[in-house]
Amino acid sequence: AQRVTQPEKLLSVFKGAPVELKCNYSYSGSPELFWYVQYSRQRLQLLLRHISRESIKGFTADLNKGETSFHLKKPFAQEEDSAMYYCALSGRNFNKFYFGSGTKLNVKP
Amino acid sequence: DVKVTQSSRYLVKRTGEKVFLECVQDMDHENMFWYRQDPGLGLRLIYFSYDVKMKEKGDIPEGYSVSREKKERFSLILESASTNQTSMYLCASSPGSLRTYNEQFFGPGTRLTVL
Image (tube, rainbow over all chains, first blue to last red):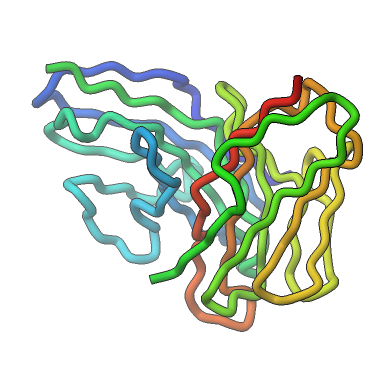
């Protein structure tokens, strides 16, 4: 069965510290992985996708097929990174998305 | 820019009322989705639609129905609202399997309170 697991409900770090939001998945096939972010009072929006292999707002995520993980990383957290982060998976049929339960990142000054 | 709009930002209804939540997208997307967003539970899929008049149940369809008469519009219906349906409802759309680009675009959400 398809599943996305985000083990941390809340992650608190100080400004300037490295941050890693964990995401593990299970999927029979080759999935497409995404990170979505929701800032306070804003709509959910795409942060990055594994296909693009790009860095957005200093965040990167590497798909590790052996460990079935797609952890989100940033070397130096900023206060404006405080938000709710969701890991998501989509199958190659481009239809359903499966979301994790979310991790709230709190970056303290 | 893809725009997904939802008819209300806040809605207060009474137990037993029939509730309609409307969602419209303007990018000719095939797929549309309705989610509930609850603290600690993340996004849970209620229903999705991959074409006009087509629908599939998601993970928590009980107590809900949907309607998609036009490609751009996807309605969520609570047949008889109950207090446990108090939640944030998110609508989303995505291009679909005939496209090469895959991403879900979300509306601003409707905060529904059932008293």
